Image 1 (tube, each protein chain N blue to C red):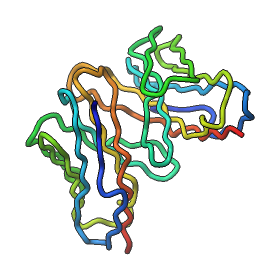
Image 2 (cartoon, rainbow over the protein chains, first blue to last red):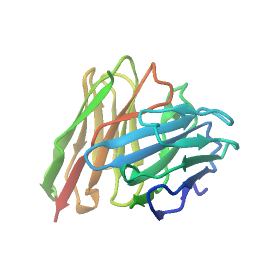
Image 3 (cartoon, chains in turn orange, yellow):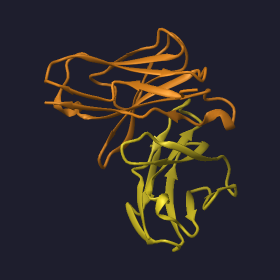
Length: 116
Length: 111
């Protein structure tokens, strides 16, 4: 199993450009998440999904959109990139929020995005 | 407001010198407390989940404990390969699925 994969690994954008980050998981997980990680700020939740066709806002959703058309994929879009969106983006997945030991989230390797 | 604070921000140890990392939390009903390890340039790697006060879990040189207000990650006789950033996160009963992360403790173990 590949676990959680992310595409691309690195990207440089100019202000105003758009792009989509792709996350894929092969563990049949119901829940998927997008985080950003910035120095001194820790990991912050952008958007998440509790199942195919559903999405919800996290802590820092402004400037981002998401879609979950297939259970195994979760897309993060930047419609008009800004320098403040320079960050490392991580995708994660989990079995679901209910229950006990299945709650842990599994993370992908990250996408390093620079917006000039 | 749910919050997680980790201390210290950075910790330098000599190989074999045991120590503890702290994770203090305030949360409206704890569903679980999670510890992750993150190596430079990589995604967080799951270590432990703790669910109730008094619970302990061990993995090699690491031992995680939980009280009603904080969790400790004890590192016994660390080796240089234990060098990493250790992240603590909580999941509140009211926030389905969502984790709230602390800022992490960066551990450096020198040979």
